[in-house]
Length: 270
Image 1 (cartoon, rainbow, N blue to C red):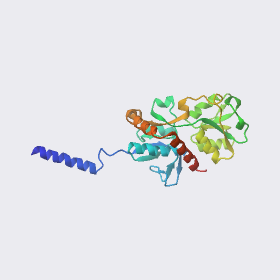
Image 2: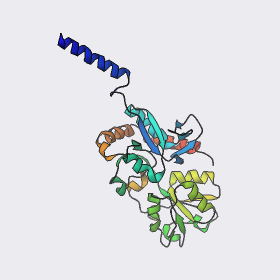
Image 3: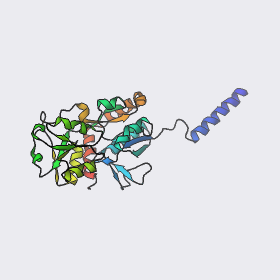
Image 4: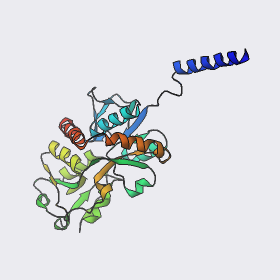
């Protein structure tokens, strides 16, 4: 009789836990990104995009589409948090977010503090200059001379500036709107950006143009420099990274290119 009563009590407890969304219910997948790095991510009022947690706005872009596919594959609800770039790794490691999907390159210094998935996009690094600038026709880094160059704080792009012979490295800034302003105003001669981001900037600023270089005459880059990957906490890498990589493996190169084309077409025009 006691065993029967114990069984009924346990069954009742299990029912209550299930009804209240107990431990079997998947936790949300909280992704951090700037929402300010088109075409990878941007802030919008379009409600068809993904709502930003705690803000009356939405986030759209290539990163958001990848985040949706990852969350769906994990069987978890996607939650987007807008986080400044300088604070995005601390936000991950403090548990505020579960992953970074924000156009982040898997550099060696970052690998010391977070774990990275396989690449979900690859892109060259280029310069953005004024269209009427003498630098617009440059074919190699060596031919740029005494150029003033700026980049975003805490990024690969800022670390690449010393590769330009004779360049003056200006103090980095926190976001691309400020960087573009520096080039448009002539305070800086150029900024460094990923090719996809550069195309977005030039499309919205007719006075600017993109300068890319042939292999051997541009930046010296390794695989991490041209790739962007998803970052998770080191203590969750063993569980999450294999699942995320499996999901990414199911997204063909053609699908990725189509998602980026859509993002470039849909990005804000200002």
